[in-house]
Length: 399
Ligand SMILES: Cc1cc2nc3c(=O)[nH]c(=O)nc-3n(C[C@H](O)[C@H](O)[C@H](O)COP(=O)(O)OP(=O)(O)OC[C@H]3O[C@@H](n4cnc5c(N)ncnc54)[C@H](O)[C@@H]3O)c2cc1C
Image (tube, rainbow, N blue to C red; front, side, top):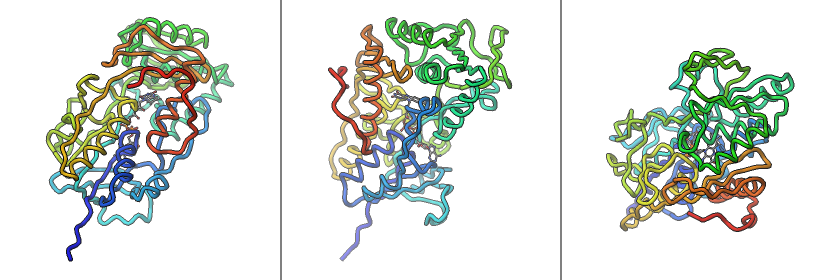
């Protein structure tokens, strides 16, 4: 009798995309040994980090429990290196007592899902003197500092004009009365200028909300450098602050590039339409760390909105291949973006299939309720138990 060793799948990165892929593979296979590796012990709801900085309590979503109920293994470790020729990853275990032979984990199939982090590299001083919304602990600590500042009438400067910066400004404006908030979106704050741009109707609502919440919007110049206590603007001006939150763009880890996997200039793994690396057929890439071009959607935007469906398809691609079947192409079309504007207001910006904003928007309580519903639906979609309930009213066009 011969024993056939199970196929070893290793998923690196347990964010929206990687954890979805890991869950679906575990749930739909019996002869696979799956290991999820993440540096953190728990899934982080990145899309709620601004809420945590505004005072919300984070939900605990440990990977161990999630994987154990699906017969998968979780290893808490930082991935240091990928060695595609040897088909293994080298890790630095974060947690004591884990049984890792020589800190290497071999794979037959690797799912690369290391996500992204705030870009504090592009502007001098941002890394040293600004906070970011990257981790639960960091966001909670920022929240404590902002609460103290609010009591003392201090100022937070939020660098950026995209969705994260807008969400943070509104969250703080609503929940931290007394805090002075400055938003620096750059030279302009207009439709089509900022990443994740909005229609005129959408931006008008955002600006009206920021004004209602007393957020001071400073345009005309970008931040050239960050110093302790002030930002130096490109036109020579300065903007003083007590706390600076950097929310201006994302970078991706360099591990794929370092390993010789074919990547874009920014380091995203280039995939074919089945999410397979074009240089390494035994590697699938998903989420923010992947460069994926879908037929209708075009180049996919960094977002959990598209990262989760990528995780679903990566699992189907893997299963199809092990069954000797052809894999399907990633099909995705956008329909809306959900932006929280505090707990009481929100914006549903409808977009066309290629993610271009159209004039239709939902705002106010309806927008807030929908945004909250979508956040919960995202968790439920991964497989976490969460109270979902029916959609609040007529659903937005679905993707
Ligand atoms: C405040 C905020 C609000 C947002 N709101 C929205 C929104 O409303 N809608 C939307 O679609 N998107 C939103 N986004 C963007 C969204 O969060 C990201 O696009 C999404 O998280 C990407 O998912 P991912 O699975 O690719 O990676 P991530 O969620 O970034 O997960 C990557 C995982 O990899 C792990 N990892 C990274 N490097 C290593 C390593 N070397 N070793 C081990 N583990 C590692 C990390 O710990 C992490 O768990 C928001 C982002 C922020 C910051």
